[in-house]
Structure formats: structure tokens, C-alpha cells
Image 1 (cartoon, rainbow, N blue to C red):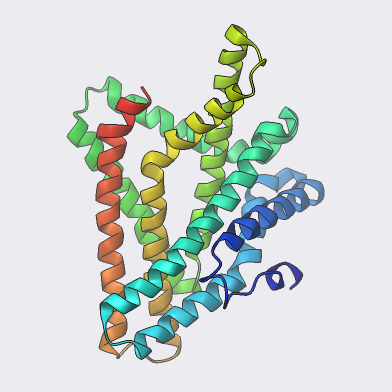
Image 2: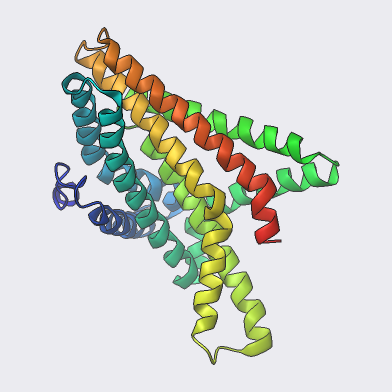
Amino acid sequence: MVLEALFNPFRVKTRPWQMFAAGFLYSLVGLGLAYFVFKEIAGILTVFLIVLSTFPMLYTTIKNEEELDLRYEKEWRLLKEHTKVLIFLMFLFFGITAALALAYVFLPQPVVDNIFSLQEQAIVSVNNNVQGKLTGKWTRFEIFGKIFFNNMKVLFFCIVFSLLYGAGAIFILTWNASVIAAAMGNIFKTELAKTASFVGFSNIATYFNVATFSFFRYMTHGLLEIVAYFTAGLAGGIISIALIKHNLQEERVLIDALDLVLISVGLLLVAGFIEVYITPLLFS
């Protein structure tokens, strides 16, 4: 009750930057407790503890968004209000990612191996899958189709989790944040080691250059994907609340949820195009 009480869910739409601090704090507390209390399962437990601390606030927020469906008649006003929620959710995501990435970079390697072992396995699996496509002479369009199909599966589960658990999509997104943090931290360490072998650490700009490379390598297309998942999760959450409150018969609720799903699919299409055709040109 203490952690979620630190941030007011009724004000975060007007102060989205607070969610970065919330995500950062929740992640550090969750990671510390998971490692020192349940070291054997610290990786997945960290994700659960972060979700546990964010869930009450997110559920309250989605509940408020569902109520707006009955208050506003114009869809554009609803989408404008939803945009505010998506902005603070992105700040939350960045806070979680930043905290876990810093933990990956600065914690001792044995601790990192213990906490991020599952995430590193997920990264290896993705890399092997991509490498298999490249060596298998897949065309870029085929790779795009495969990526889009995989992203659509994640989108589907975001909707299902939110439909069943109200704000359940936050688990999938927190897991993705931990995987991205591990990937960014790994790139940071690798590139920093390469730079050190050539120029040493005499210039602090080296750190910032490597950190910037790590961030944009994964966020050039990843940012749109995360927005899409949050948008779909919001749609599922709105339907879930409407079912509980018996408001699903209201046409505006269904139209609003459908619009959010269509927007999320469109975002995934753009993200897939950037990942296949643009990101390799920028970070080859």
C-alpha cells in the first residue's frame, strides 16, 4: 500500500513525468527485494513485483477512461484523453527500462547473471531467429511479415490479459521492458569495451555516445511497438471495466475500443517497416 500511495492516479495525466520516477523507483525496489529475498527466481519475480506496485494505479486510470466513454460523445475527444494516458504509460515504461538498464550496467556480473538470465535467453532466442532468417535468404518483405505477425501475437495477448485482469497487459510490457533493458545494457557494455580498447576513458562523451547508440538501436522502432501494446492494453482494459459495470451495451464503448485496436495495428505496421527497412541502415 505504501508504494502505490506515493503517486496519485488522478493527477498523473497532468503530470506524466511523475510516472518515470514511479517506474524507476518501483523497479529498483522490486529488483532489490527479489534478489535478496528470493535469489533463485529473482529475474521473473522482479517483473511480478514491479507489476504488483503499478497495478492499482493503472487499474484506477483505465477505470476512469472507461467512464469517459459514457461522458463524451465525440470520439476525437476520447482519443485526446486517451493520448494523455498513453503518454504517462510511456513515461512509466521508460522509468522501468532505465532503472533495469542501469542495474544491468553497474551491478556486479554475478548479480546481473542471476537477475537477467531469463531475459538474456530471450535475447539469444530472438537473435538466433533473426540470424536464421538472414542466412535462409529471406526477403525483406518476408521478414517484415514475420515480425508483424509476431508483434500481432503480443498485441493479442495484451488485449486478452487486459480483458481478463483489467490492467493485465502491464505484465507483458514490464517483461518487454526488462528484456529491452538487458539488451541495451549488453550493447552498452560491448560497445564501451570496444571503445576502451581504442581510446580509453579519457573523454566522458564516450559514455554518452555509447548510451545513445544503445537506446536508439532498440527504440527507433521499439517506441512505436510499445505505444501500440499500451494502446491495445487500454482497449482491453476498457472492455473489461465495461463488462464489470454492465456498460458494454453502450455503442460508444465498443467503438472507442475498436478505434484503439485499429490504431495499435497501424502503429505496428509502421514499426515493422522501420525495423526492417530503416533501423538496419542507421545501425548496421
